[in-house]
Length: 225
Image (cartoon, rainbow, N blue to C red):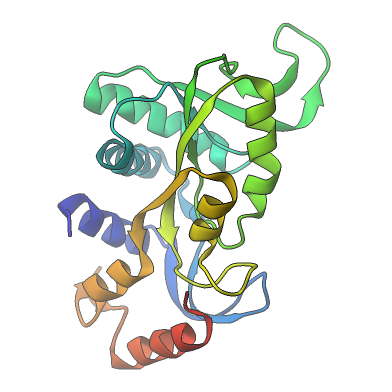
């Protein structure tokens, strides 16, 4: 596993973004782990988060893209911090763009988008925190495709939970790939998280011990893709 992935796993735990215990998800599933990207709140956390996204995007998709698109609302800061990190790490200027939940009908920047406008020929990388159902893509992809003649290169999320999506057979990232025809990837998968953290001290404690590993295995027996 690449060193930045190992660092990112520890970063999620130390930032209290990835938690282990008993959680009820929006879907109603009882999960032994929970991810809340809204817990990245400080300047140093956001700087590091942008760097991890930039490294993963660079490793996965290379430099042949023009725009980072982050769906509102959580995708807005993700796109911004990753665009900054990309410039600093790789010397490449990429634009950021996000959609508005409500269209702005006044001023010089009125319309449905924040940041850069989308132009014919743009190559776009979508960026999100975590995809469990793919619902946000249902709303976002038509907006992006309708704004200009663009190519969506792929989607990058921070964590692939690796559980079945709405269809009940494949994980949400694979469902998005099948539905829209672009690549879908994550900085890390939950399999990588478990492999790295199992019986390994992190922040002075073991967050995945034998009991938690058994709970996670049981969860995937039921909901794993």
